[in-house]
Length: 444
Ligand code: PHE
Image (cartoon, rainbow, N blue to C red; front, side, top):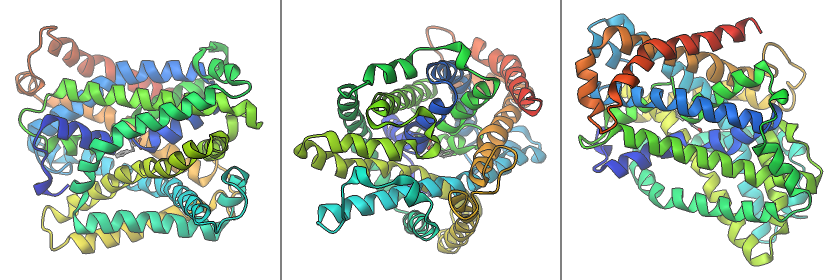
């Protein structure tokens, strides 16, 4: 975010930060994770974590941003007077870098999907969208590397030109449109054979289906979808207008995130039986099921949906732009002469680390260790290690090094007198809870 892209209104701020936070996490990762780790029980854990841990943490990150108003690699030191605390900012930026590496793999799949829709629209593609075998697509190393290269390139050009503010404005239209499209798809999915079973799968919490691993991944999902522990949201708040209200902004983003996740689940799971898929399809779930649903739509609706859906998939781009921008901004420090160079170097590095991630669905699919494939390990490193650790360190920072009265000033007054409970939650409860979940993961 360049300095000129300060948002003028609180709504502008909410839309911009929602544009960054609500992306593939809610639309792609939530259904895929819920499918593998217990459906309704996973959803329940995700909701509990998002509301009781995610929301207070988001408020915490917004508070730090609004208090410190500078780069994430300087903000911690500036606020506490202790330079070493800036390490939290650096670790957040490392998380963002690795995250962009595997995010762009999925971004590449989207590019391939859009190319296929476009070819079919002009009569060049053969067969129908639903007949495309997604597994074949992602197991083609050349296609996928080109796809992700294009995805990173588009992100890079936008960041280089510094025009992301224009895109943020587009969020005003994109967010409501996303809701409309998702609702239309949900309606169609619900009308398919075997839909009730899918609805039960995602809504009914069968606790016996929840493993310890599922609990850990639900926490990771809450962090990922809200961009927590990466300092991303701190950066957004550091540019926010004075009148930005922290609690309302955080609550709006949490609610939008939950709605998009739920709608994505309700678009996918009810359709699974009709097309013979299983919930545990893994990372390809969204891409396998949705095209089949579109196929079922009458021509007019399909035409309308193929296109806009590709476009709402482009929401992934608003997140990836912020991912690159977060790293570019700490190295350019608003010196726009450095922007092109830093954006190019950053993108090339991301492209390099994303190649093994993409190949874990093809040539390198035999490599399995730790959390699974190379792709799985990158995701695990970010969502289950760096993000929780970043958030843990930030709660200690806020609870131990910042003054309660400074925090209270930016937190703002409210009728419910939420400051004190929020403060003690962040100071004593959340660090213990995050640490507990984190340690359980090491000994699972
Ligand atoms: N929360 C984003 C998503 O769900 C990913 C993200 C993480 C974006 C961290 C910016 C910073 O897609």
